Image (cartoon, rainbow, N blue to C red; front, side, top):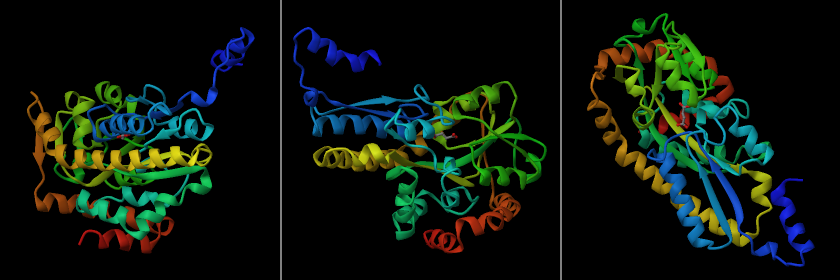
Length: 327
Ligand code: SIN
């Protein structure tokens, strides 16, 4: 028996009484990015709000930067009950559902506003609840931003990526996306991405501005293209068994705190994306390269076959609903 679990018995043995109900419920919220990012700030806000609303009843422990679990372990840890809340990228659910792969289809969404409209639609909301049969409770969607290609060399056209190795998240769609341009994708946990770029295990990557800046990817990827070819967004999730067993007043307080913290994080994602980009641009030896409409069209065309490859798994109706959100 772990020492912490033995404490009440030891105290009883000493004739001291403790009321276990008076002890706060400890809730671990683990994620893999820096505190300054939209997800990092949302997690801190959740702690503030939940501990205020449920004073003395809950204690939220936030673990950023893969301190507790990396993205290769966090989902399993959640299902085992070793952590209660995580917020994985939507690209990391392949093992649990194919429908969330929609968020990885290249050039599907015009911008983050379209992503948010789709997530708020009945289709998007049904995806949020679809994982309950897998023991996962979906609190809500959280945004980061549009992804930008980066590399050791400029990538103006898809041919420029041919033969290069790219770090990707654990997503089969992203794997297919880079294969479509003749590149070699490599699935690497986020916490190992910087080293992979520095040691030239990979030549390139794709990330939103907040992750590029906060992980210092610009130090090891001198060329960053304004490609906006895909999105990085998250689902904040909890262990469903743990969630369903919580008392109603705790569930209510946590739900409210979570909804507010997600709204806050999404506002940060919206308001600070340009700031993160300008911080990166201000760094020495970094070239932020705009891509013109013709160049973007070449990328779009080269990556388009990926849609066909995954449309059956994802569902045509879902893809159509996502396209509607662009209007
Ligand atoms: C994250 O933002 O949570 C990490 C995304 C990645 O693995 O690239």
